[in-house]
Length: 334
Image 1 (cartoon, helix red, strand yellow):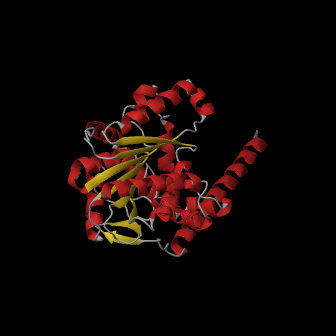
Image 2 (cartoon, one colour):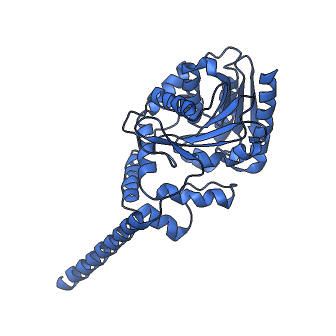
Image 3 (tube, one colour):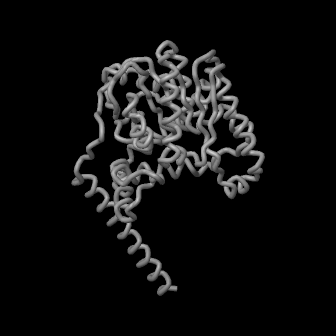
């Protein structure tokens, strides 16, 4: 028994020492690493700074403003910016805590987020009309923004954005209760510098997405230098139900042009693991995306050969979206 106890004791000492070494190494990285340089600018909107990255000359056409999905950062939309910058003014930004933006002490309710974006646009000298483009949860956010500032929005573009009733109509199970604990743990490990150490060792960010050039993906490591990114995401998630409800209520857009782009790829293995029928889910997705286009009398839907993210991180898909947005801008000008 004594020998077994000693073995466990030394194993415990070894594991504890290893964890301490990892944490100390991570903290050293946090203290001595150079400060990241964002590919845009940080703008004070009243107590904290938001990151904004604008491309393309200002002209007589509407400005495209891209609202990212949950936990999404502005760099994901690189190909959209590149494909449109010769024709349109394109604004990408990061919500509070996400990407390069600073955390906010204020509530992260949908109206606050919409008003922060509005303030940011005014601070940097952008002016309406805007084409609001929203990816994933960003689709909910642009509906709220459009409801608050209807005279400033010329059109809406949904990028694989969910229907407000998607959970109920797909009968989706709630996310596992342990997911929140995982994100909180990740945020703490980020603050300790452990996430930074991890991404340096594996040489791949936890936010990696296929199809984007290395000059973009190499910057992803900037986001895991601390836990800010995950804290920002967790604060937004607290308001998820409010976001969906406000999006559901923002449903009357008359003849406002709406363009819906949806990926056709579905992770059938994951769907079946939840006890759901992939073919039925695919048909329901098509129906719901068409309903979103029909929020207006001037709506169109496009189904692309891609997934939730690759419909714009893969250049071939981004080119299709860019072509349609340019066509939309021409229609708005006439």
